[in-house]
Length: 305
Image (cartoon, rainbow, N blue to C red):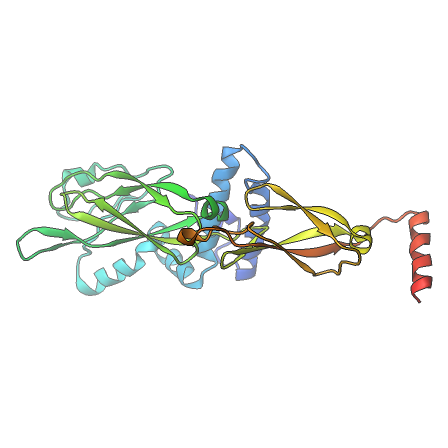
């Protein structure tokens, strides 16, 4: 049986929204790809954590998950099926369901596809000529901010055709660079039986532990030693690509000041170019002072008094 989203985040089913958020942040910091470069296990774990958080952090999605488990994405179809009769949908998951009248091709279809986006399915309606036309399919997908920056590829699997018994197909789909949460990416593909199939990827970009997105800009914090803030200096700022950018600080830089690093934000899509990276200064006060350092601060205090 698949691990539940609650188990993935290590929280009980009655966990509060705050508990869910705290667990996510703790695990995201631990398994983030930037911290575990080249570790495929950590990368896979990070994706699982993001997926679990996206569902449990949303009140409506969490209700659906609590009721329908792994099939929570299809809650609306289940509700319509209960009101209008048998469901027109066919799906395969880790728990295989066998409805009446299904073909042998459907019953023998594989139930898991590893890194697949998930099994997607669609209805087919009868046309005036007696044939069938596939209806558009919406597929929810969660990606990391790094994938949103660079673009990504996913594999999807169509369900077997319920009328002809033809097996489904595996398709590689491309998510364009710069995509944002709430975007719908259209993909045209041939469906089983020959009818054209319109796929819409409903994109959610997972929260990032170090960057916040505002439009095409990215917001981050940069830690600055007190002496560098007072006297001026140079600090390194990490970008979403992992590269470091040198930021020169003028003397008497105030805590909370924002510096704009142009062109270091998200891609702007078809319009070209990139947004900016906004780095907010977070002055770090010294700790564990020795006697000499403390004496110097006391002198500074007297001079300032």
